[in-house]
Length: 287
Image 1: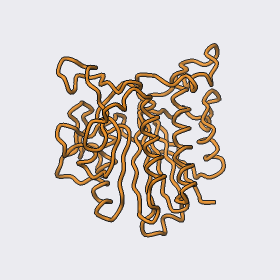
Image 2: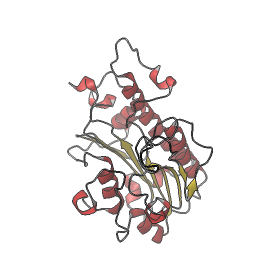
Image 3: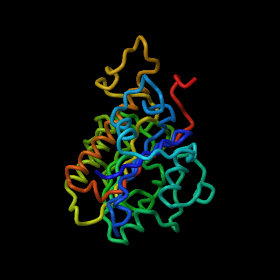
Image 4: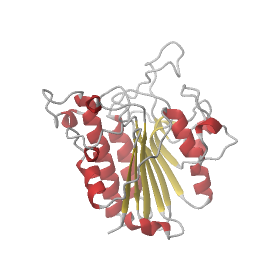
């Protein structure tokens, strides 16, 4: 069984990596999962008895190395731009506004890996620039992408900021399929789309070619919304802030689904998988 490293990091950074054997290979598959606004105390293995994250908890117990005292930037865009460029936020930008972007003179990890022979894919949140085609995921080196460029409602993919239509925040749909609008695909819970795209991409991938996939979930960012089947896991009479706990269970299922397809595809033993979170938030039960 391959080794899995799960790093539960204070200030709400969680990371998973697999596997040690992949490090010895010239071009392992690379899967990077970034969870949005997921706090330090939002998984069962941290001692939160209300959280329902059995897959992550099991990985920590059975297949992981726990590494602590790693920190991420507290805001969305600087954390994402830092990962994508390998630069600290002061060097790539610390703004968290709609116009936050990566200087086009900087190369991204996707551009570097594409040049090294990797197939690259992205799904979910971007928030690293969209004022020109060059700033979008496809423009920054991702062969395929399904996601949103700034911030949207979980269910409708409608923008909740004044981004595309000045003075009319909420009136525009922010959902894109690589180099064009993903027409007709909005109206489904967002992470069903984004995790589904990751699973489909891996399932259809030629395992003999190295893959780099960047899955950036929308959970657990506001608005606090989750499908009913996740909320029904919790007793509303005894569990405070059920939508937040439900979104933690969505994170757990997302990591489970991605891991399952890697195993089924025979790619798991040659994959380095990292999952991280950034935020300054925690569930109310930490207090």
